[in-house]
Length: 114
Length: 226
Image (cartoon, rainbow over all chains, first blue to last red; front, side):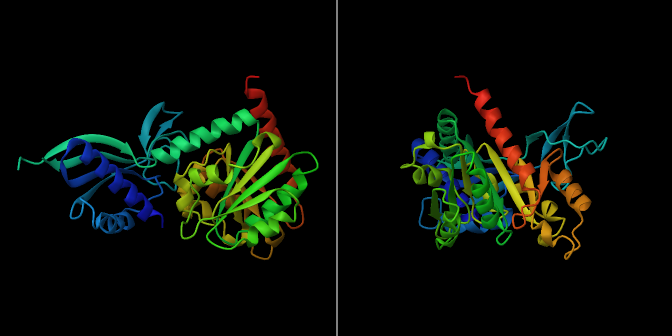
């Protein structure tokens, strides 16, 4: 359960960006990879707590879940994995460990008002 | 008030940890020390495994260990029996180690005096996966008593690790552990991952694993331009 420290990191990053621009944040958009090791529900809960008594109190955390994308050496194509339990190409079933996406833990946008 | 608008910021939440980890990795490379981090469930036998590793490497190599735990210094005391320098990092309520903790713990150690440094993470197969500690090799340890499908239950940590060690092999028959099933489970979450099956208690399989570490150290040293 390290989602609370991640939530604090998100709030701090958002506050920092908001302060630089002198804006009020109403929503934080987060990209969360399937291999980030972070549980979405736990993060949403922790976010609310982490926002308390900060300028972000009452803001929403909007999570975009990013599936794992691998490179299949057999097909020579990028493929999305259906499950993190099975690192095989969904088309040709070749095993592949070359991860191209899915580890994201990134605040990529803020919904703000002046 | 103006209309709400969306601004792009692109901030990696773990960037601060990653920056410190990168600095540590450079420091380790310059000092010529090879760093192995250990992750596992609580009770998988990590401390016994590490104690045997330290003891058996010592005739040939200068070794040391950092040990992360929520509380108590019991593990450090046990590991000190190996006569290797050991330091405990007590994380309090934190469920994983972060790069800054490793950096702090190493402040008064001369890394040039070491060949191998082992970092034992807090017993946890979830939270440590995202935190780079600057290690050269991440070793995930599981014991035969945990069941063959542990990798599929914790795919993220197995996917973030470089090598898997299955220990307590002396109990294999008693718990009807099936190596082929375990190997398939590892392979499904981390294709091509090297794995070792051993018993830290009896010593069975330790030589192959220790030779692997020696080889990794030699490889790292030849890769460094003098």
